[in-house]
Image: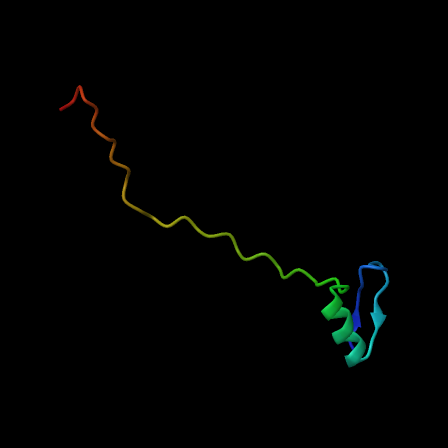
Length: 58
C-alpha cells in the first residue's frame, strides 16, 4: 500500500490502496514530492570575448 499526502491534509501521510491511489492521482489531489534539483552547471572554458569595432576604429 502506498503512503501518500493529499491536498486536503498535506501534513498527514495516509496509506491508500492501488485503486484509491489512482483515483486521487486522477483527481489531482496528491502532493507529488519534488525531485532534487539538478546540479549546477559548471562554467565551460570558452573563447575570450572579442570587442566589437566601433565606427571610430575602422
